[in-house]
Length: 356
Image 1 (cartoon, rainbow, N blue to C red):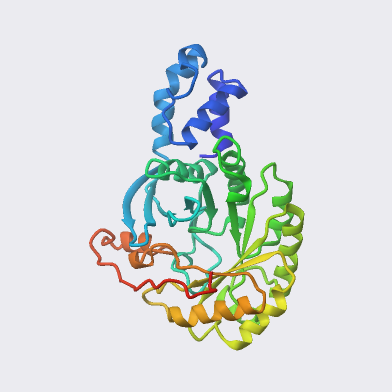
Image 2: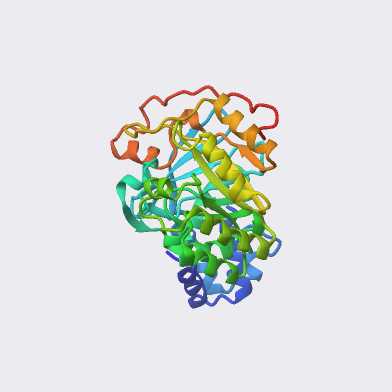
């Protein structure tokens, strides 16, 4: 379901824009339709009031909790069942930061990043904009959500109309600040054209992962063939236009993209740019040939970049002890053992001084 379809349904029931806004605001904030200062008997049209129970049931069925997997760090990975039975993942992020949620935008993904479980399935289907917002509504039944990151399963740029529609609703009726809506992409050129035109302009996260064009092509084989330099140039233009720094995502793969050569490349690319570099140690995935570097090695890389005046944040992927990122929960569930398989455990060490 799309938000536009939902709006049309409301209008067919006699809703005016103010009625639409109320229904969408309460739903996206996980509040009952009877909430609010005005009693529905004195505010909503009679035809809409009669239809509300069926409408609420349909909205609740868009995204239901299949299983929850809390991490030792306070995050929580959610396996979410959609109305047609397909499964996606959402992640309630670390509670010591702005309370946030990472949402999925597709079932599967066509980009095929070599270190991501989701990409092994290919694209199964797109999520409608209402299904994207429904993940936020579901998460808000568990804890507050003040930030939404479009960085779960799928490539948001490949579902651009639905994602932009969800962003517009979340940035208005959904009560999320615009800079706390983060659109994450491998760098599809359409993003740089469409995002500045939206009524709600989100912050932007770009998957960089390496400064070497040949390695980036290998790691992201079906991503747009932008060189790292072209990607950073496009990101810088968006950052200056919106006033939000670009978040460059760098999944740390031991022995692959953590070399001295990469550090020099990062300094060359990002010096003087309105940018934050997020170093994220790889979430080790069964059957894939990559490993996470030690925390000490990752922290040393962050320190060295800080000394070169690159704003760098060393982040642990939320809930790494759950072993459930990048489509892993979904994959285990399809095998029938998501609820019983013992998660891998990893020691989480505090950041070294200067690494945050």
